[in-house]
Length: 98
Ligand code: HEM
Image (cartoon, rainbow, N blue to C red):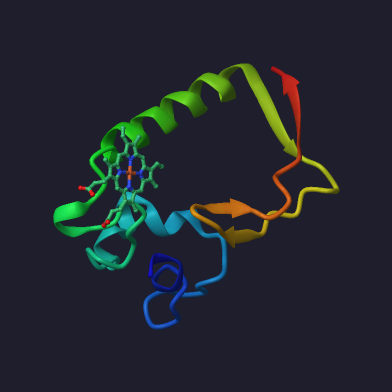
């Protein structure tokens, strides 16, 4: 189960910490091929993975260019597992034009 695998103490240093630097190119070699499976793996792996990643980068680039997104005192990100992983209670942010 990806939720368990992605938080397993055997595979991750500080498994509950938000450390996006784990995925920097310089750290790629430290990750096992089947350690992180957001798009599944094997013969039924997600056919939209490349598109989804490209779309996400484009959407972020378009939004970040025009707006600033700041946390508020109410912003307390906490992941919950539903069909997809989502922030509990949403993710209130203050949006302002750049
Ligand atoms: C962030 C976005 C996405 C995530 C995290 C995601 C994740 C997944 C996962 C975990 C699977 C199951 C893989 C497995 O059984 O091992 C899957 C399957 C699939 N995904 Fe995605 N997906 C995403 C976006 C998309 C998009 C944009 C498309 C289509 C344009 C798509 C089309 C499919 C299809 C058709 C399957 C079934 C493949 C099969 O059973 O042969 N997905 N996806």
